[in-house]
Length: 306
Ligand SMILES: C[S@@+](CC[C@H](N)C(=O)[O-])C[C@H]1O[C@@H](n2cnc3c(N)ncnc32)[C@H](O)[C@@H]1O
Image 1 (spheres, protein in one colour):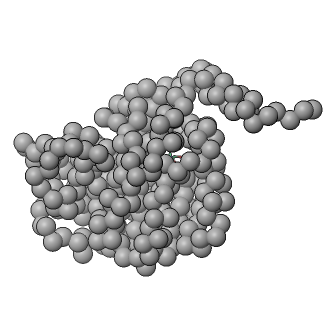
Image 2 (spheres, helix red, strand yellow):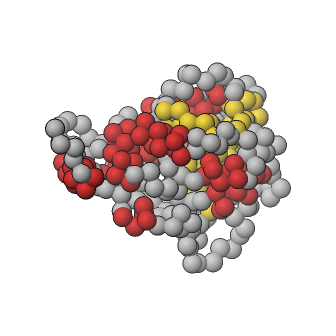
Image 3 (tube, protein in one colour):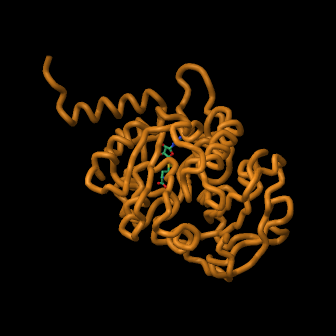
């Protein structure tokens, strides 16, 4: 049988994507310089209700659009992109002050839903020595494993963040999620998926370990998921304008943003950039409360989650 040419293979993939009603990644995103990521895409932008191909719930039944919550969506997307590096929301350079502040370079780091982001290799360039990258997409894990075969600090495993039972309890100092919980929020059974993932992260962190969640979700839609029964976090919130935001910010991004006792932004607080990203620095405290009351941390500009 004759082998298809690469262009006919590409057309076949495009036809497959079209028949699955997937929105292919914007050409601009794959070609975009990594330093200026698109902050958000359809369905993972403004709210958990999502939209486009990635809306929460994802539908059910034949012919439906795949959603950001499904491995098939990501596999097809990474095939289409051919492994082009792409960092969602923010690059490491912008996140570095937070990462360095809460996780020293010798930390054993779990990167949840690594995708094709440059984040982990940037961290290695910055001195990090052990980063375990997991992703539900076997396609992207294979691509990244091949790309980084000669960087011993980076390991890759295909895994669902809702079940990381291969790792033993308390085996990581820090877990970082940039956009993965957001993806789960677009899938079927989102609240259950979020609960499973957050409980797994809590289990895998050493006492005092840090879960850094980078998301478009404001506290009203993220604190309830962080605050699972069985978790005992001290949560400190930071807000970072999207890359390229031209407006002025009154405060330093390194200043924690206060939340109320019930875990929402204080009355009258509105981020200057409506498309800001939220960084929840969650420190695992000793023992579980078994309640759903997070320890909300109030403003302390020197806070290091120590
Ligand atoms: C929005 S992308 C973010 C990728 C990367 N963290 C970044 O910052 O660019 C979400 C990633 O989460 C992965 N993902 C989605 N659901 C997952 C799950 N249940 N377990 C592990 N990874 C998942 C996807 O394959 C995708 O690579």
